[in-house]
Every structure is written in C-alpha cells, then in structure tokens.
Length: 434
Image (cartoon, rainbow, N blue to C red; front, side, top):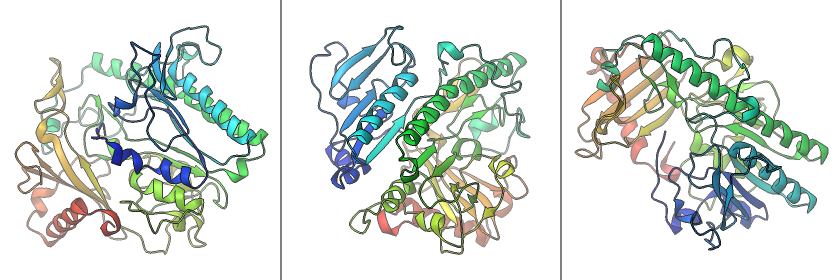
C-alpha cells in the first residue's frame, strides 16, 4: 500500500514488459506507472518539446506525470510531454481516466489491425483520492448506501497497534463526509466500467476476445470507518490488503472461484505461463497459479486470494480448492512513509507513523484462518530484530479482526512457528519463496 521504489536501469530492464517484448508482443503502458514514479522517465512539463526516453520494454508508453491527477493532466506521451486541458478534446475531454481508456482502445485496435499479439497494462488512477468523477457522472446516484458499515465500523480497538487503539469516535459529520467520498469513489469507477466495456466490445468485434486473457485487479484495499479509522489504506487488516482479482480467457471456466492464496507477485509469472513463455530462466518472487486455474481438479475462472473482496463468496458459488500442492501462508509487509504521526488534522484520526511499519502472515488452510503481524520502527530496527508490538487474529471466529489474541498465545508453539515462518518469508527471494 502506497509503497515507493528506488528505480534504476536494472529495475526497468527486468520488468514483465521486457519479457513480453522479447517474445514478440507489442507492449503498452497506459496510465499510472509507479508512485512518485520513477518520474525520472517523465518529460519536463515546462518544456514539452524535449524528448525523455521511456523505460526499456515498452513499445507504447503513455503515463500520468504525476500519477495523482484527474483533470487538466500532463502525460508522458511516448517520450514527449502532452497537456490534456481542453474540455472539447474528442477523446476524453480533459478527464484523465477517459483519456487513458481511449488511448488504450487506440493502441489495442492498432495492434490487432497489424495482427500483432499485445500486452496492455491499463492503469487509471480511479478511485484513488481525490476521487473526482467524470463531469457526465458527477451527479449519478450509484448507491443509496455506499459506505460499508461492517461490524467493526466506528468500534474502538484498544488492544490493537497504537495508531488504531487511539482513534476517537467518528463523528456524524465525519461519517457524512465518508458517505460522500464513497459515493464519488463509485462514480469514478463508472468510467472504469466504460473502459472495460469498450475494450471488451472491441475485442469481440475483431474476433480476438476468445484468444485474449482479460484481467481486472487493484493494488490495495481501503478502510472507511473500520476500527474508528478515517479513510486510508495503511493497516494490515483485510480491509486494506484484500483485492479483487478477476480473469477470463482461453481454457478458463467461468463463474467459479479458487480459495488458494495468491497475490500480486504471482501475477507476472502467471501471465507469462499462460501464454507459453518459459519461466525457467527468470527469477521471480511469485509463482504461476496457472495450474490452479487449468487443473481438472480446480476447474476455475475467477482467481482470488486471502486478499480478495470480502463479499465475493456471497456472490460467486462453487468455491474450489485444488488438490495441487500450494502455499497456505502469504507474506504481508509495509514500510511506513512518515517518521512522525501523519493525519489527525485536529481530528485525532492518525493514518501513519514510523512505527506503523509491519510485516506479517495471512494463513489459510484446513485448520487455521489467521493473521499474524509484527510491528517495528525502521529508524531503529529495520530488520525486525526487536518488534515492539504484535497482533494475532483468528478470522474463523473474528473475521473483522476486532480482537487481538496475541497475549493469550504469545508463548505457544503456534506463535513461535508463525514467527519462524514469517522470518523465512521475509528474507526469501526467487525460488526460495513459497
């Protein structure tokens, strides 16, 4: 959540786009590339005529500079700067998500016309704050109750990490503001619906949709009022770390779900594996879950993980557990972006602090559904040699993570095994990761 990378040439040379490009695919990056970006690859907005070479591996590179804009935005357009601040522009006006969608449509259409296989990474900023809807959706009523009032909503959690434990009650005014924010978040997603619809129709019209993998996912969750927290995403709970992952494509059967643990690092090897690219010479922390999708034992289309949407099991039936060998725990980690308490603004709803840095495991198997976390301050203890706080949740009996049971189990074999497993996962790389 909200992580930033120190990017250099070695990073750019080892992205998935390079592998696809070398295999003959036309590669397209459209939208948000990275937080803060490695915006070294963005053109100068004050001198748009100067060429700035895009990262290697991308045939088309159309990116937001910076990545937080909705209206009147500056883009890096294949090495040159381009302002989109004309509301009359026929390909999306001055609204960035629509511009990203239309540019994606154009690039994909061009590749299909030239009979080129393609890899398109389409990354609009929606629904990230400030969650600005398109003008044509500004007053659309998407939901009568857009805010999720889960059991932990506006409930104190005094046995949690201090940033959570000290949260004051959410006031009526704050809750109304959250309702407005939630409504606008949904409104921004109407444009994402348009992008998905239009590209799907394009693929159908070109008779290539049955030969195309279509993936829909996100980078993190979001809490709004849970544990009395304001709107943010920097905590280890399932509200923040569970994400949707939907996939359709050749040989993937529809309307089914896999309960196995997968995550973002698994996406790249899975995509490469699906299209038949050899993974043996590549070093990746994740692993392909193609066998889970295509196994006769798992018969699935929709892939989710412990990080998937809370209500998906209410919507999708036939939860399938593959008999293939697969992990039963997954590493979660976050490095705080602030040394001093962040947020509050007089309300007391803090969002981050140096010692909000955590690592942990989500464990799901036939015996357990657990979340175990260790907190530290990286300014004093970067390697988690002496964590200063612990959390343990049994999600079988406490799915909203309202009761930290660490103190009851801290001396047990279970916690010792979780700590040992966490350390192994934390320091692993490549094939040594589970």
